[in-house]
Every structure is written in structure tokens, then in C-alpha cells.
Length: 496
Image (cartoon, rainbow, N blue to C red; front, side):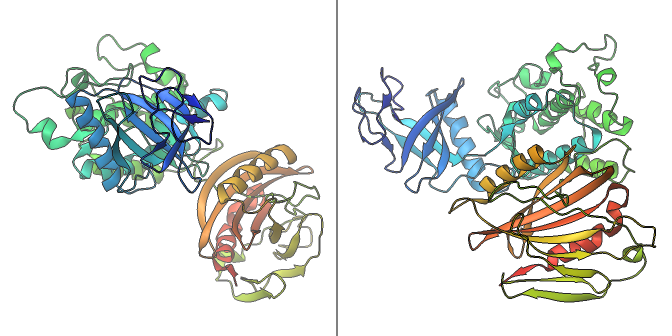
């Protein structure tokens, strides 16, 4: 479908191959580059569409429908912020991403902004997909740190967001967060240093502090909204539905989040201070407090923080092009990786054009497994004769299911198959990772091999129309003992 963005068009839907709207005659190839596929949403300031560019890439087009000077100013601020602040936690906007477009039957030009389409769910959708299971302290610290690092960049450029809430935070397939919808930002100097007048009032129920409702927003207004966002994530309850203490005015939420550590709960309450002066001074102070929380001993509860992936050694077919079933035969942990430096040898495969370093004391077994595409496995020494399990690193080479296949496609397919084909799987972590100087992905999860609880990390990359998969598998209680060795091996992996 080609969709007409003329707000006055009565029949905006058109066949996908024509260049002019059959109803109003407006151009369907916006700025000679973008064809609108579908409507994504509509708000008080504009309408959002999904578009394809000339190369077939999907992007997001925001069109301003509020044409008053203040709306245009805010819209242009959004474009300027995203063009200047290049960061993985912000949607990318190219230098020519902002432009105007004039429909056929109107005297007003539309202000347009094209940006990266962030794949994934926003945090409201994500929590719904998790059956509204509140997050734990570890994941909260990880996510709060990511968002504070993004705000640190934004605030240091004399901008602030003013509309932080779960729907405006996207979670990429890698697990990394992206702060979106900068339609409300404005320069700090215009907000604080101006002697008279008001800031345009933009608010979201339950997430907006009082000073912002009164048109006096400042950078620490973002902190209030950030704190309220994490109340939602830690309780699965909308802040606007929670009661406040009649004496202190503080939100009553801790009784609904018993999994949250006291230091983290204290920090979140500080973020939600009624007056800006009661909140952390700036992003640097907030990052310092978060760093101290990260250094605290982990709680015994399962954590979804710092995703890494790990698969088991099972003779099952996951499907062509999937990260593969990873062998998980008997493992055991020896303490040499804790007590002495490993001496590494180099294994090179001329058949598959890769090489990897492995500990001299580990056993190497070359494999020819046509079912699960395993090439070689490196097995750690036993601690003693009674040791039933041995940790191992397996290299798997797979032909892609279809060509070309993007890394994001492969990631989604692999994770879905792992959830479907392994026993008692609990994915703990997912992250992007550099593998063999190439963009890759890593996942960590708990599994079960027979009666043994195992933990696995799997890392992969795509090259030469193949998936190169490296898997570390260990008994769950022994996982950390050889983790450093496994990471060293993965970092040494090269593809010729």
C-alpha cells in the first residue's frame, strides 16, 4: 500500500506502485525518497508512519499536524537534537532527515522528520509480553544506568526530554534501551535563563512533576519521570493509580516491590522528590550512585542483567539457519582458570576458514555432525575421577536459512527456537557483541541436561552466508569458574 500523508485526503490508501494519490493528487513518493506503508500512531503534535526508502529500508516518518509556531519550534528542536546527538540509545536521524512537504490541495507545507525505525517493543509492551511480571533489582540497575547515560549526553548538550515514560523507551532485540519521542525537548537555556514567559506544557499522567505541569520544567524534571517509570517496571502498576503518603507526599509503592533492594528503592524515591532540589543534582551524581549499587553483592534471586547467551549439548534439530543445538555432555570445573594463567594453543580450520585459541590443558575433538553442524569442541580437564561434568566450548558453522539474512533476523529466529526446543529454558541476558571484528550477538540462559542444571553462553556472527556460533556450556554452579577462559577464547576467534 502507498499511503497519502495529506491530512485533508478523504481516501489516503492507494495501490503500492502508483506515484500520485488517486483521491487528492498529492505525491506518494515523499521528498522523492520515501513511500509510506502504514500509519503507526497519532498524537497531539503529529502523525507517525512507517515508510520504505529507495533501498527498501524501513524507517519512521513523523509528520507535524500542529502547525502553530510553538509546535513547529518543538518539532524542529526534535530534529536538531537527534541529528546532533549520535548515540545507540537514540534513534538515528540523518542530516537530511528533516524537510517540508507540500500536499496537492493545501497552502500549508507539512514538516517531516525521518528517523531510524527501532525494532523491538517499548517497555510498556515488553512488560505486557512478560505477563506483567515486575523486573528485579539487577535489571532495574542495568536499565536505569543505560537511560541515565543517554540523559547524560542529552543534558550535557543543554537539552532535556520532558516526556520520559515506558511507551517512550524502546527495547532493542539486543536488550539495549533507546529513548524515543523527543518532540517535547527544548534547550535548557531557553527554559531556565528566560526571565519571563512559560515553557510549553507537555505532560503525561503519573509521570510528570508539578513544576512541569506549571510550565517550569528543568533537567531534573526528567529524573522525576525516570523514577516513576521504574516504579511502573518494578510494580507493574501505573503510578497514577498508586496512593501517596498524606504527610510526606511520597508515592506508596515499596510494598508492591518486595524484590527491590533498599538502596535502589531509596534512589528511586530520591528521583521522585517533589521539588527538583530534592532530586539528584545531575546525571553525573546519578551515575555515581548507580555505580555504587552495581558493586553491591548480587542477590540470590535470578537476574536478567548483562545478557549473554549459552546453549546446551543436545542432539536436537533446531532448524536450518538457527543458532543450533549445542552439545552439553558431561562437564566439570577445575580451578586452574582461577589460580593460574592459561597457556593457549591455536586451532585452525582450513575447511571452514576460522581459527581460535584454546587452553593447552583442554581436550580438542574435531566433529562431523551433519545434524547440528558442530565442527570442533574443546573440553576442560576433570577435577578428579569422580567429576561427572566437563565444561566445553563448541564451534558450530551453519548455512543461513535464506540469503541474504540480517543479523537481527537471525537473532530473533535463534532465540525463538531456543525457547521452543530446550528444557526449562530461562534466558538471563541478551547483548550485541563484536565477534571476529564483526557485528555479533550473545545470549546467556539456564537450561537442564537430564537432571543437571546447566548455564550456557552462546555468541555468534554472520559472514560469508554462514553463521559462526561459539557456545560455552557449564554446570550452573560452576559457570563463573571458567567464564573468563570462555570469553578469552571467544575474543580470539578469527574468520579468514
